[in-house]
Every structure is written in C-alpha cells, then in structure tokens.
Length: 67
Image 1 (tube, rainbow, N blue to C red):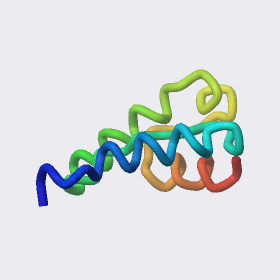
Image 2 (image 1 turned 30 degrees about the vertical axis):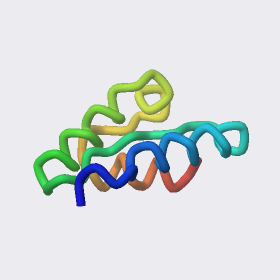
Image 3 (image 1 turned 45 degrees about the horizontal axis):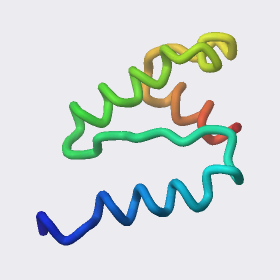
C-alpha cells in the first residue's frame, strides 16, 4: 500500500500530540530484525542508559512502558 500517505499521517499525528508525551520513538517494524535493531538503538539514548536499560528488546519495551 505504498504512496497512500501513511508516513504523512504518522508525522501529523506526532506533531499534534508531541506535547502530551515525554518521548516519541520511531521503530522500523518491517521485520523482526529491523524491529530489534530499532529497539537496540533506543537503548542507547541517554535517558535509557541512565535507567540502566540493556540492549534486549524486553528491557527496552519494559522501560518504554514505564515512561
């Protein structure tokens, strides 16, 4: 379903609600590998490091859920 504006809708939504959330994360969920890589990347942001989040998907998702 390429070219129907999914990205533009997501960007507009993010713009509209950005003040309501402390963080907004973009996760490439094309496949299991890309999802894992995206979550691993989130584990390296300063706030996650400060919270002792390791590079496992479970740890990152638990941290995101606690925000």
